[in-house]
Length: 214
Image (cartoon, rainbow, N blue to C red; front, top):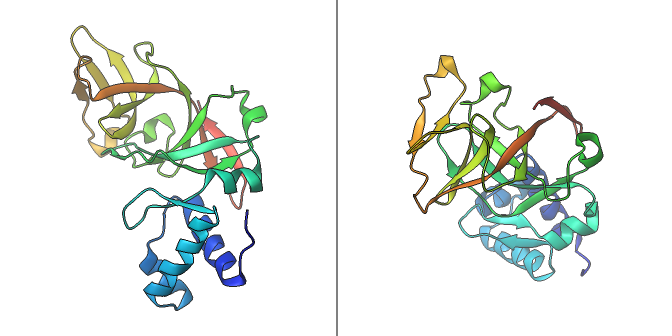
């Protein structure tokens, strides 16, 4: 990968920090942080994409670290963090790797497991909080009653899944929040089970992780 100028490196570090926190920055926010014109930020991020450090998934918050850059700095030994999952009202699932964290040996998980970030509070009674990461074992089917990630169109949500005769119930876990069970048809082409949730990972302090729930 091509070398970066000092300013390009600082912009990349800022973007990387924001992505780790789950809040991709807009060009306007980058400009405000560094006291730059938005055109200058457009040029800087363009150089970072051209040099292979960033990719763009579209939209004004579409900047992501490239898989090449992530691999070069952290290697492929960790578990990839892929997008976000809505625990509440679903949000668009980003099919981009934000980072890797080295928890494979700790969790005892297989190579195909990935992590999705939770947004919302509908699963707090299961010990899954806003901002947590859930480890997902890819599977097209799950047993009734298992905790799973379900794709609804282009949106993903984590819920307790109950397989019924003619429908699937997606059950939240927040009695105080008043969340309701959502019912979907298994024949709907826009509905797909992504996999079962095998663990929930929470960041405690700087770059420290713990597993509070399964």
